[in-house]
Image (cartoon, rainbow, N blue to C red; front, side, top):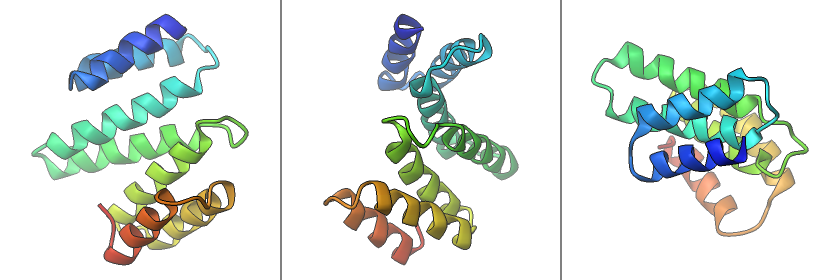
Length: 128
């Protein structure tokens, strides 16, 4: 799974979001424990949502991305990044209470600067 996830990361870096999504899903659907794949899939879906013209489809992609971030286990090293991204997406969708809860969880795990400040600022400004 590491090679497949690495290839998906390359697709993501090359802004080939649909290809990255397919690769991440292939790893996840095989039932392999790869939190990086869930995190990457969430990012790929988020970036696809930003480019989507259909508001309803964009919202669906964002909600699916949030689900991928939620699926990253709290004990995994990727958990802080997943919580950060989740808080931003939730705030952007107007789900303020959930965004603040995710932000609190993030700040408990990683109160370091500058990311903590960026998250606080984004939530205060309404996210995104």
